[in-house]
Length: 581
Image (tube, rainbow, N blue to C red; front, side, top):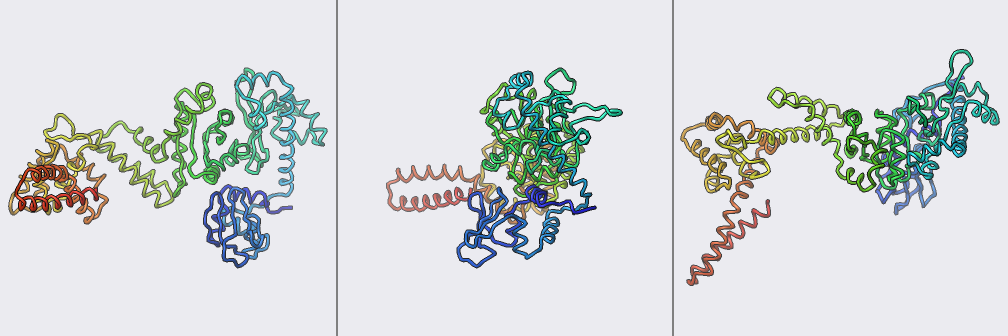
């Protein structure tokens, strides 16, 4: 016999993983956020004052007026007047889940597996208390009693004890052999997979034990082992630590993803009760969406060694495909000799918070990946950087985010190349200081080379401006000499300048790309006008002080009146420039 696999419990689990109740209900009801909940006018009765409340963390809605309430299934049933099968089909389509069909016998086996793992965990937890070697090991790892209880850490006994224990619950040896607790060998031989190891129960999103992780306490070559994947355990659908840390994560809206379960436990003991583990360095779409359903911007804190950082880079590239407005990740970098567990054996909570405060955004981390993969910045490799930026940006499915990433990374590239190849080359006749200094003066020069029409339209004002940087002032005067020729086309002026100063064109182009290229003509004109005003400001301030002194020294009332008018005009000009700056 075959039946639909989707159960109410599983559907609710999938919904909580991929979506939020407020997001679905807001398609039909106008909701406003208030604290951790959303409120709106109830769709099930007429009301003037909103009394309809939606709580995403609980996955429930409630109307304080008509008392209607429930979960996502009851909302769809009541709002759309759907039958239960219609509701299941609607939500499955909404979540993009295919309704699978499986043998009812298999579903019964899954229930049996869940029961066996739950009973096994009770045995392991009880057995830990009677095993001094296991207790001593946990003490040596500084795992305290609170963590032992919170994470239900246990110790797996030998095969005979397991068989005798389960016989009391009506579970046969044949049933046990079908589970992950035993490894079957040739013939009727078998042995316990987790025998003599510290055990860590692994919970699914419904808080049911679906697998175990285990750590040797002796000299075993294999330190850690996990349950094999099964019909109830898919590593790509698990976040270790969620069962223990869910409430703190939801309350503080902070989440840190680490590699292993010992990292999660170590952080828990150091008052960081928001860590989860992907149980390895891979991250599935299911896990990514679950993380985002908990917080908008989780942290990733993998091991500080080379392998850990390479894993972080792979995760960053994987995440790109799925990011959307407001959903991203940040990266915490540990010292190269530490993982989170070893870090807290040497440092404290405050030291880790300092690292967290210096975490980098996904965009910054991506730029780091790009620039560290190049050591040649000749033109053909700069073109390769451009291709890489385009390729990474195109991975992002959301078009608006993709566009912003492309602009961000190109700006980072231009700034990097400007600083690397800045015009302070001592071999150049004319050179600039770093871009951070004299920016207005440099942009004036950029206009001469790339926006000659705008430059020429304000020639009278340019002549009046004196640049503070002597090299730039010399260059400006030279440019004015070049463009003073009569009957010359604008193109000829531009060509003359570029031919005369070939050594600075590339660097000027970088500044043009980062500050002017994206502007339309009217914006460029407005910016150039503002640049000239900013450059005139120091002279105007000097002129104001001179005039002020004259006014105090002059005795003639007529002259004083004239000077005061002139002084007021100067003040007005200065204020206008300052206001626009």
